[in-house]
Length: 453
Ligand SMILES: C[S@@+](CC[C@H](N)C(=O)[O-])C[C@H]1O[C@@H](n2cnc3c(N)ncnc32)[C@H](O)[C@@H]1O
Image (cartoon, rainbow, N blue to C red; front, side, top):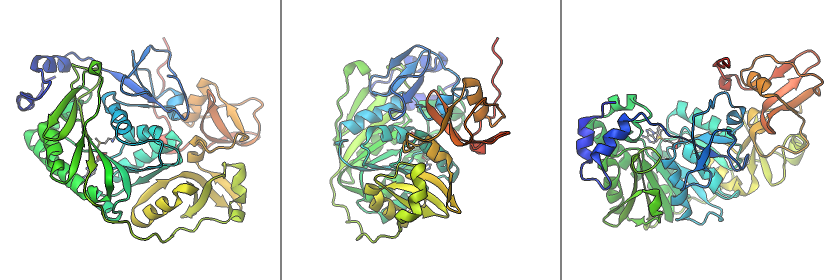
């Protein structure tokens, strides 16, 4: 691996930078595999391979080998997320700056494919709302799929430019801006990123990061918390951005780190940054800083309800499909979504101002008083206990996920969940002579499993 000389030169003098160790780790070919479990679905790592906890995250684990995630049904059931270890430091930043037992409104501004979003959802209280935004439409679709897999009911996925959030002044208690960057921190994983790296691109990224932050900060409440991060090593995208934030009446927040974690703390003026060097800890290059907003925010507009919830009569048929307690049901384009009642106002405001591509739990479509359940409902944690389900063998689970035919002896007829290890994978409708597989086509496993030798 040939690192750009201009990058190495630009890092000289940065706290914690060790040039020979930096070059060595990139040439060693060593790879770190880590996952974060979904505490709403499982409580232990579901792999036979040896694993050790990631010290700064209660849900993160290093794996001694990389299993085939594609052919693990529990991956498709949303039981865990494959995520780089350093970025799980978000947990520390959040835990140390906000009271997570409170109902919070949180924005994850640059959210696709969903690493930070799924992590945030595991940390916040059930009556908090997480708005997970991605500006690029195709990437917002991937984000939505990952949010559905995670199975939570308190996330809304939006597809807006950061400037769009200026229509929601003072709306958020917390904002996470995991900014698009020059990506040098991921060189070990993605060698093509090396070809795209240039000093000019670092400068462009730095300007774009400032623009994104300036556009979105009006939507943060006074005293609200901003968490900023990149996977770049460059000072212009890291410390320089923290310095610049101080000029916008943002106040740096110092975080406590255990010295054994080997994270490099950087104090620049009154801002505090945290650098992750891959030769000092087990993880990729990463940078994070936290701030509190010290300037008055505009007040949000007076609330006027726009969305009309469905009546109890209209939703009567849903009772056998979803736990309706505490939920309001709303219809968009014939599709019925369950919104937690206590988040109704926030979701309704959001729907009035932003391009919302997903919210709550998509329950399904009502056709002539019958519900055609959506895949999202199968993966959600709002299913009633009594719903019909059939446990599949691992082989059948893979065939189900590939949308291939399989045979079930003595299975109950009708709509039911296809499950593996107690976790729903999706819907199927068992007919007398065949099984209709409702696993979404666009999510199916396309690869073939290599035969065991
Ligand atoms: C570092 S990635 C986010 C990774 C994500 N937070 C996670 O943990 O999975 C940055 C994201 O910012 C998005 N992005 C690109 N240009 C942007 C812009 N001008 N404003 C906001 N987001 C942008 C990219 O599409 C990308 O999804």
